[in-house]
Image 1 (cartoon, rainbow, N blue to C red):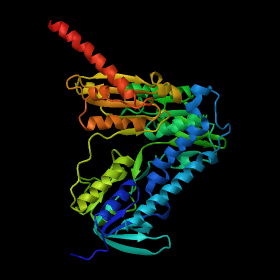
Image 2: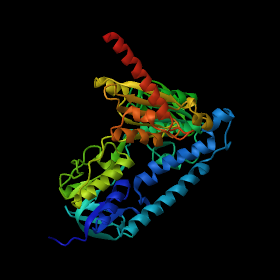
Image 3: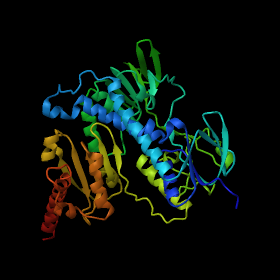
Image 4: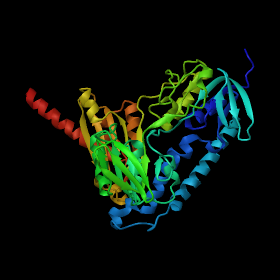
Amino acid sequence: MPDFDFDMLVIGSGPGGQKAAIAAAKLGRRVAVVDRPDMVGGVSLHTGTIPSKTLREAVLYLTGLTQRDLYGQSYRLKEDITVADLTARTRHVVGREVDVVRSQLARNHVTVYSGTARFTGPHTVAVSEVSGRERVIGAEHIVIATGTRPARPDSVEFDGRTIMDSDNVLSLERVPRSMVIVGAGVIGMEYASMFAALGSKVTVVEKRPGMLDLCDVEIVESLKYHLRDLAVTFRFGETVAAVERHPRGTLTVLESGKKIPADTVMYSAGRQGLTDGLDLDRAGLAADARGRIGVDENYRTEVPHIYAVGDVIGFPALAATSMEQGRAAAYHVCGEPVGRMHHLQPIGIYTIPEISFVGRTEDRLTEDRVPFEVGMARYRELARGQIIGDSHGMLKLLVSPVDRTLLGVHCFGSGATELIHIGQSVMGCGGTVDYLVDAVFNYPTLAESYKVAALDATNRLRQVDRLDQDGDG
């Protein structure tokens, strides 16, 4: 066996790379991580999940948006909200999280190299350091966890100030009075709701006939209603022909002939794998047109000792799933038994209000010809909903009339991304709607919505059973 510098080398320190490195280190392996000095913690920590969700919290707090049902529509905590107000919280959180990541890697004796990596062979990587020095590192196993960057159409001239992607939007000089967002996916809708809450006049352009098609239709309609209430305009089934930059803003020209003036334009056109600088061919690998690397069920690439995890392998491209992929890959490298990632993965969308779900939607169940009954709880019926001033939130349970198990849980409103884990746990353990009916929840809480929705579903099931029995009689 050749004498390698490390048992495992991880390229990228985002959620997937970080968890892979720490898991292998805890199993007694010699581990190193390579990342740029300004990117410890990865895209997730610097331009993605953490800063965008922190920005959302700052927006909610400073605008007082969630308190307006209680204190009136004119209520605001701060009248003139500046970018400095918004970014102060983001900088604080990112700084603290970088310290946490560095501390965890150091505590587990993971060697960190600052620089960019490229393959020089199947087992060797050249690291270009900031000083200009280059060092070659050999490793028995290599994990690629380089993440993604926003995809940029070639026809658009991005300047990072008036025409931006989702990375640049965090460094805006001021809150725009008006904004066009191209793309009604998860990232596009999260930013649309944030800027609308700040008072920007937002227009969303989407070539598809609708938005967030992975979500429950009723919940998407509710979100659309609330965003329209914040003066968001939707242009579905429309394609951007050109974006013109002018001294006093931008003009977005649609193929239908419409022209939309705005201070800024933000493109949210998907993500591109960060693989173009890796020299993958030297390791015997290749990426697809979107920069993604193919892997098997153990996150192993076509080269058996090289693994890839996180956004760089494509769907579902979530920080939560990336962490689990990193851990699973490290365990496989070390010959440690690891359970399969559970198929019930919750989806959280941090729009305002937020959306979260687990399991199948009504449309999907109908397509699959699976019968279901609906149980609904509305926040306005809950004491906690009244206390916090959320009258529009809701929780929906989709229940099997055959064995009374939960087929899907869909939540919209305050705390949705936290609440969903109750439904996930019940579904994961094969629990039934009757468990939720008989369970005692703290009062007053939003979690009580599970009991209300479960009672609603069982009442509906009971009505069907009675009619069936009458028919049999």
